[in-house]
Image 1 (cartoon, helix red, strand yellow):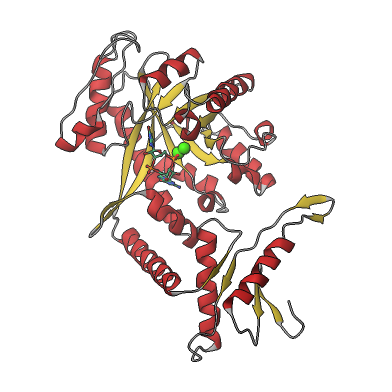
Image 2 (cartoon, rainbow, N blue to C red):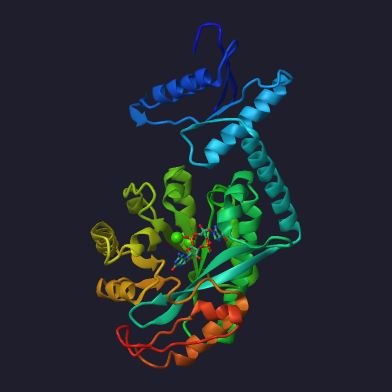
Length: 394
Ligand code: C2E
Ligand code: CA
Ligand code: CA
C-alpha cells in the first residue's frame, strides 16, 4: 500500500483497504496482485507452518454517486464471487457481479421457501456387491423439485445451502426421509439382507454441536437399526476440528453406525487421520475410476488405494462405474462394491422400488447382476439384463 492509504479490519478475517486518488482500475489490480503475492509465503504459528490465501473484491468509484455503503456492498459481492469460484484471486465489481450477487440472493430466498414447502425429493442409487453382483447398499441423493425450473441438481444448490446454513435443515430432512424408507424396505423384504443406507453429511451439519444426538433421535423415530446406516463424510471434514470430531465419530461408531470417506483421493489425503478415526469404508472418487484401464496414472492410483484400504481393513466402494471393463478390473482387484450409471443412475423412489423388486427376484441365480438402463427410464420402462458373468453378453 502507499502511505496515506487506509487499512481496516472489519470482522474476523475480513479486511478493507481504501485507496484514494487512484486514476485507473489497473493500479488497483496491481495492488491486489501484490497483496496476493505477499500472502504466498507461509506463516509460523507455534512452530506449525500455515498457508493462507486471500479472496479480494474490488469496487471502484465509477459514477461519482456511490455512497460508502455502496462501495462496501459491491466489494463484498465481488469477493463472494471470488470465493465461490475457487478463492485465491481478485475480482473487480461489474454488472455481472451484480447479477451474480442478485442471483445468489434470489436462490437463497427460494431455498428458504423450498424448505417450508418441502420441495425436495430423495433419489436412490444402488450400490452393488462385486463378488455376487447383488445390491447391498443404497445412496440417498437429494433433488430440488423447483416449481418453475423443474428438477434442480444438488451441485446447483448445495453450495449456497451450505454457505447459508440451510443445508442443516435439508440434510436432516434427507436423513429422516431415507431412514424411514430404508426401514420400509426391511419390512417389505424380511428375508433379504438389510440394505445399508448411505447418507451424505455436509460440513455444516457435521459441525452442529448435538449432531450425534440428532442422528440417534432420527434412528429412534424411524426405527432403523444403526447398523444399517452409513454416513458419508469428506476428508476435509475429519481434518478440521479434530478432537471434538474424533469424540463424536466414536460415539456414532459405538452405536453401530458406519462411516465412509466420500470422494476419497481428491481431498487433502493426509492419511494420518485414518489411523485416528473409526472409518469403515473408502469411496474411491469417480475421477480415478474414469481413467481405470485407460490412464496409467489413474489405474495405478486405484490399485494403490485398494491395496492400502485392504491393509488398513477398510472396505471399498468404487464410484462412477460406467463400463463393463471397469467392473472386470475392479473385480480382479477384489474391490468390494461398485456404484455408477452402469448399474443405475440415481432413481426416483418408484423406479428404485421396481429395481429392488427385480433385483431380489433374480438374486436366487448365482453370479448375476442386473442393471437398469437409464435411457429407458424416461419412457417409464424397466429393463433388466441378466449376465451369466461379467464377460458374457447381456
Ligand atoms: P456424491 O456424494 O459424490 O454423489 C455421487 C454423485 O455422482 C451423484 O451426483 C451421482 O448422480 C453421480 N454419479 C453416480 N454414478 C455416476 C456415474 O456412473 N457417472 C457419473 N458421471 N456420475 C455418477 P448428484 O446426485 O448430482 O450429487 C452431487 C453431489 O451433491 C453428491 O456427490 C454430494 O456431494 C452432494 N449431495 C447429494 N445429495 C446430498 C445430500 O443429501 N446431502 C449433502 N450434504 N450432499 C448431497
Ligand atoms: Ca456421496
Ligand atoms: Ca462421491
